[in-house]
Image (cartoon, rainbow, N blue to C red; front, side, top):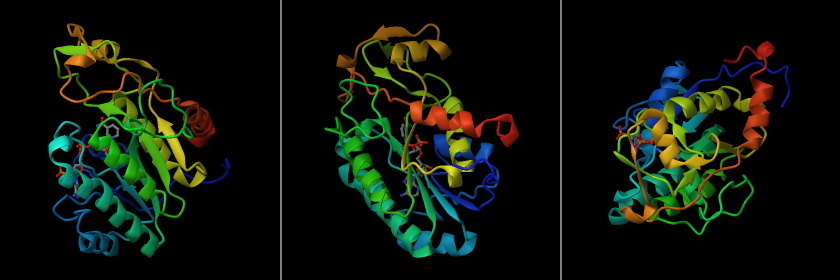
Length: 255
Ligand SMILES: NC(=O)c1ccc[n+]([C@@H]2O[C@H](COP(=O)([O-])OP(=O)(O)OC[C@H]3O[C@@H](n4cnc5c(N)ncnc54)[C@H](OP(=O)(O)O)[C@@H]3O)[C@@H](O)[C@H]2O)c1
């Protein structure tokens, strides 16, 4: 990373702009262009091609995915098509047009048995089908030249459930906390030489995270979940924190 490079001024094409993360990124980076799902369906290469011809981006931020962890167990084909075939289509378009790719991945690619995973730790064995599809997607994304894989974890701005697990540990945070960090990485992507970054916050239980925005939440256990959940999926975020400190110096004007 060189301190003299200017911040990103490129045209950015975002997939998944109507999603939780996508909506926040659009608010934070107004120059991003995010065609709706109907106009850019990642499972239909001709729609990707059409949008690239129209927008002429320099960078693709790929945040579209099938994200229903419980639903993926019964809708494997739909999940695979969006997460794996869709990512393959995005990679092929990136290669064809010489576009850099930022791929949004997940902490779920790890086993989630010990926590504090580093970027270079070996992934798997994954705990559910969504996680499997995202692991394959991540490895597919790496085939794009200079791809940056961002592993993250976030939830809606509010905690929606009356019960939260005390025995699931995570670096997850609320999307309005995580999205500004991802926006920062996107904005300065040309200075980032790492191929993988963990962007999340400190390790805590889901119950402790829930209490921050829902003080009356009750404690519960992962044994009651509808899908197998990892006990400790937390990420080591040191690499991003060090990079971020450098990017966010006052002379860079990054906020
Ligand atoms: N939420 C989490 O806890 C979490 C954690 C770690 C990583 N991630 C990753 O972060 C990214 C964003 O997640 P999110 O929670 O913001 O997602 P989300 O709210 O579920 O939104 C998914 C987005 O993908 C779009 N999409 C789905 N299939 C598509 C297709 N075939 N073609 C084009 N667009 C399609 C959806 O469009 P429509 O809704 O308009 O159809 C929507 O904009 C994903 O890659 C996800 O795996 C999420």
